[in-house]
Amino acid sequence: MPHTQAPGVPQQNRGGYGAQGGGPGNQGGYADGYGPGDAYDSGYNAGQVYGAGHGGYDDRYDGYGGYGDDRYDDRPRPNWGRRVKWTLLTLVLVLLVWSVGTYFWADSKLQREVDLSIVQDRPESGEGTNYLIVGSDSRKGMSAEDKERLNTGSAGGETARTDSMMILHVGDNGNTMVSLPRDSWVTIPSFTGSESGKEYPSPGPTKLNAAYSQDGPALLTRTIEHNTGLKIDHYAEIGFGGFAKIVDAVGGVEMDIPRDIKDKDSGADFEKGKQTLNGEEALAYVRNRKEAGSDLERTKNQQKFLSALANQTATPGTIINPFRLYPTMSAGMDTLIVDKDMSLWNLAEMFWAMKGITGGEGTSMNMPLSPEQAPQGSLKWDMTRVKELMSQLNADDKVTVDGGLPGSQ
Image (cartoon, rainbow, N blue to C red; front, side, top):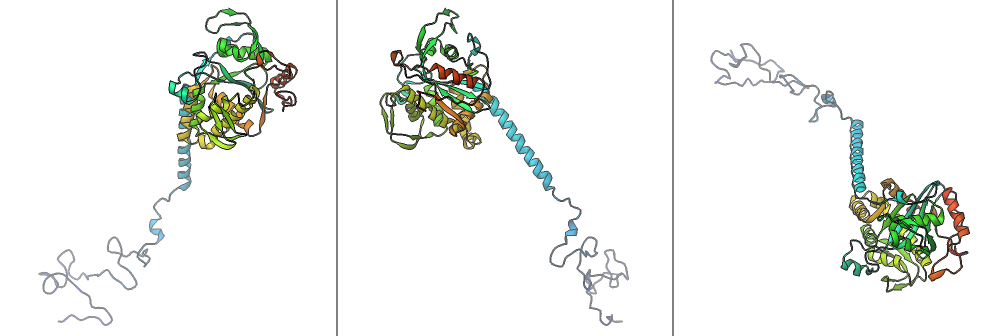
């Protein structure tokens, strides 16, 4: 009897194999597990889409080619707060490791060669911290080509002399930088040789830079303390070659030259106006003496330049950039000679204080001088004002004393 389709029911395709869509013994069914009478289900139904799994339907299908959000309800959502926290912790850890590594690297390169403990008859310590900053004409480590390029010559042979001296006082009531002209007429006291251990009598009054020539940093420190009554807490010295290297490492230092300068002895040759000085030019500028007219004028130039150098060195552009920080620190550490108790923190304090003075957060001055004539064209200190100034520094009071000659500042 022919198969008839119920009215309203679509014609179904029974598929299979064989002429009648079924195999032997199978009347319209399948030999693959469907028994007789099992109706074939096409998997389609009105209003539904064939879905998942086990031949059933997935009503989570959104009808637009995808599934609704509830399909992923069981998947954990990203914890962004946790990710941000761990990222920040990782960055802090990297920064900490880098900082500690840099600290120990720099500390190992610092040349702690000056022993201030051997200085005799020292004054009592006062408030604040006093640094003696010395620029020497040492040519140590300089080749013949370097000496010619930097126009330093070979004066003094192997014996270095002080080319500039400054006392930097760091305290709570403002920082003060006091230049000590190398031609200052002072008394060198008796002393014990720092290397020989021999006792030497006082050579009497002479120029201040003679103290360094006779017995180096120890006698220079003793002479300054003897004539000022101010205890020096730390000592820092840099020679010609090191000075030029540091300037080049920071990419030069911008200066406003007040006038045209030309001095064949120092090699200075500048036109008036703002310009960036490289190491060679900077050294010529701070060494310029004859054109400046006096040692007093030269110390002012040295103060301005060293403050500008500190100001440019202690900037975020140098500190956070390893390609500038490491060459600058390496140049400084390789050439800077300090006392045995100087720490990197002290060194940083010294540079930040100099930077602050450049920005107007402190006082820059010369040692108070007397208009009286002194022997050998030297400069005589005004001891009344000197004592007042040293008393203010020792007590860490605000400095009110004028420097230089009376009425000059």
